[in-house]
Image (cartoon, rainbow, N blue to C red; front, side, top):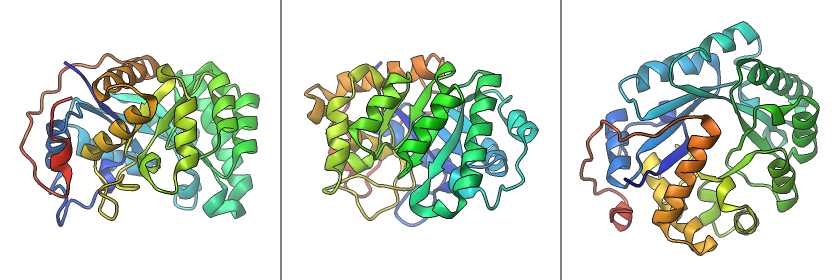
Length: 284
């Protein structure tokens, strides 16, 4: 069986209304029908993780991660190491994050972001789990902190990469993977496509970051895990490989990074016919 992993999604943030999935089982089944077999569902605060944990409990194909996002520091400003480490003990947890730095939306909290990011790198090293890093307009500080706090020791992934080749090179040198989202399909995403051409196949992942960043040709609707097929096919075209082969490669990369062994999911496939998703219904 060829697996395809949505390596970063926020299932607890989907609206489950309108033309999209009506509940989490619907979202999972729609994704399965498009060949997406596994998911990494990410929480941005310990409080959000508790909700996400209950929501995803019935689905063995959904892996989990928990961290404190740089844009969630106001609501989680008093987060403690013990609180986060308690979440990271749960079965199915494979990573620490989403953590990192965001100077595009929150430059004014730079000091707090740096402290939070450093603390989470230390926790990742303590619990020996890879990092899931968000970095936006914070190249120098992100890489500097990754080096000084020994992020290399646990490794991880630069999620939803949207920077330049120079940053990708530094992160690859630290042993990190680079994950590509629907931005690679955007008209304005040429810089991301340049990075995609540069990154070796054995260091790539694909993701939705749903409910955000729906790829072409479904821009303007809420993103969902099924749509990672569009990103996969775009990436495969750019790399000059078959989509099926890239699905196998990125799934193996996911296994290697997060120290898991993917198995055939329990949830059965279901027919879907919303948006323009019929285009990607063909088997991988």
